[in-house]
Length: 497
Image (cartoon, rainbow, N blue to C red):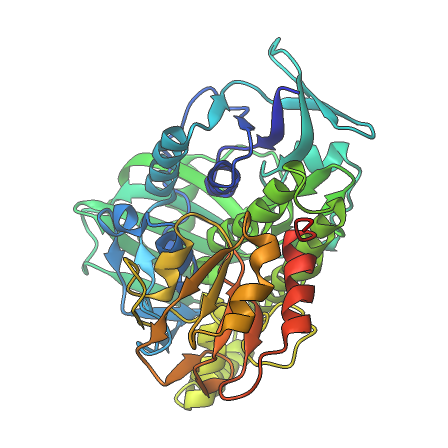
């Protein structure tokens, strides 16, 4: 074998997955069809849950140093307020995808991830023991246990694996570019709706703006070239002026097409990020959903290739992440409809905006965007099970001062907050895979997005992705058989003896 896993695509999803695999001890090669990074800015922000994920790995400061926190978000251009009590990182971080990729690639290099540029995937052949990945441009083929396609919306890996990509086609076209706008009368222009469409101009750095124009019922051919002149003319049609637009760094096109892979796994081939789901980029959810796909899949795939968990564990990846992708497609379709020009949409936006002043409505939309309320299927009754673990403060815990710091090594943690000898004894069969940590919670109650405040549990089993696999309610006897079932389900059989 050349590697345990080949990852196709060196974007944020592929790089995050490669880092997760290396942290868990798997050998990984990332293959990328491009010869080098383009420097194109692309996506422009990271939401709360992704910031938490980076914090869980101890690398968040790198990203905070290159971005700017934005105190509000939006749902189809309507402002959404964030709640500082729900996360240590409640606000979106404005940071360009090009910077995210550079930082992730630096981290991947530190971890020993191997990269192969100018290596497009052109063939995939599976058998009982692995997958052969054929590469173009005379690259030598690679043999690995598994292949993960993180190669974008037009994923070659998805097509070669025969995975369907159903959904809805485009009804509009948006042009996007990083340009100078010397005649822009304001420093910051949010979404402006006009009879011909809508436009926005966002300042990411002094003198340069991210300009986006959207025109409806104008859908060019999928492979039609995109030019600076097209962007300039579109801005004139929508805004009535080009604001002196000049010196383009990058120009591209997107639509409101929404499609999702009908399965995220086909044998030894898996999909993540845009290869698994595409949608209207409203609210900046695409990059975030892809990175969170990677964090869900990485520890599972590493456990399987190390022989610590059965291959069937990988089926939980589709079971958990496919519904999340469906939810993103659903809410971005709604946002696309809400921004269309016309008197009917004007009235709908006015009613919708009036509803957003209510806390419950604002909270619901906030959770759609920041993914803090996601709950994976769980067989247990405790309200924490399946949800992401709150980053509670800890005492009597050695070097860690809060829960998320316990996950820097990307290993599962059994956090015992009451010093139970029974809990400590139950986990001994998994001592090679699960870290037992005894500590005390600084807070008697934890705030859990989606359900509110709960009493701090007596103990909880936290997966490497930060989701709770088992929890013991305070004051009672811990359900040790349920704990052993969760350990066996997620981390493989106990050691003999």
